[in-house]
Length: 173
Image (cartoon, rainbow, N blue to C red; front, side):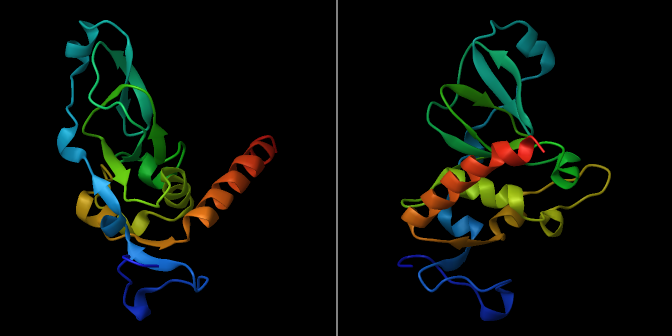
């Protein structure tokens, strides 16, 4: 694909169609971690409960103001869930919301669907990118090194639609 940096051949984990490209996560995602601000439980208790307040595993509270107002990909930065996968690691925040410092905040480059990236991150083994045992963590450097296959936008959309179609069936098994 045009404009996407390819990786060294010996790093490519599996074959992909010719119209796809392998790249590193950090070359196709726009990191907005510098914009997140943590609020303590004590600080949040004093606030009206209006906007979602996200942590590593999703909404953990509500607050009376917001930092973001566009759909963005959130990926848990720390916690046992990185390895145990009891909840999704990657999810899309929508509307107006606040994000603390336990979730990476990411936007995509043109032609890359956040839903596709979330599905890919939730499907792969993240253990090689996680440091620490008592408190597992996936820092920006490790996250940015993840190899990701990028299909054309139309194919990304078909993949996401198929996942959305199949997931309810699998969840009810």
